[in-house]
Length: 122
Image (tube, rainbow, N blue to C red):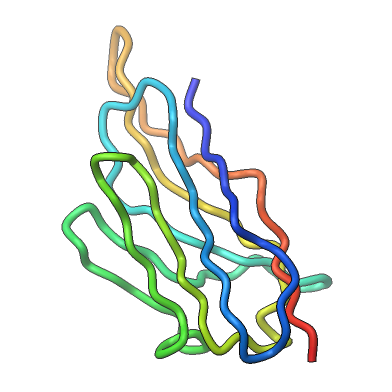
C-alpha cells in the first residue's frame, strides 16, 4: 500500500521559515512528478510547486523567490523550504504524486498526503 506522509507544518510569525517533508512509502515502481499544493479556508486547492524526477521545477507566481522545492529520489521524499512566510501562506499543505505500481500489471494512481497545517501570524 502506497502512503504519502507529510511533516514539518506549524505556527510561525510572518517573515519566518518552515520546511515541509513528504515521504512516499510502499511498493513503488516509479514516481515522476512530485508536488505541493495548498488549500486555505474557503478557497480551492492550488498548486504551490512541482518537481520532476529529472529536476524540472515549476512554482506558483505567489511563492517564487520565497519557496524552494527539492527531492531525494533515493528516499522517495520531496521537500518544500518556505522562507519569508506571509499570513496569506496560511493553509493546509498537501503532498501529491502520480505513482506507478506493479503487481500483475502496471497501475498509475494519483496519491495525496493527509495534509499538514501551516499557520503564519502577522
